[in-house]
Image (cartoon, rainbow, N blue to C red; front, side, top):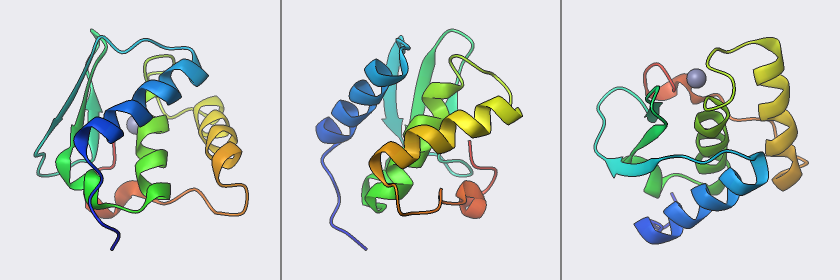
Length: 107
Ligand SMILES: [Zn+2]
């Protein structure tokens, strides 16, 4: 386990990826979620599990990209997965995209 990243740093990561992907989340919340890493409302509000702050960088990154992409593509289509993989590999070219289902339904 890595040390916990501060919430403000996590938020900055989300905003950086939002700019990269070209979406504008209306609100970013971090709180305890029991069954998911994150969720996204139709109105563009993203909520992230605070447990993510203790996850390794690649897991945080995959969840952040996944959730932001939902602002563009609501469902897990082939295009969705292709874009997720492409953005993830910009930062971690040599890693597999982490499987996020270990904490319930993913996102
Ligand atoms: Zn999803």
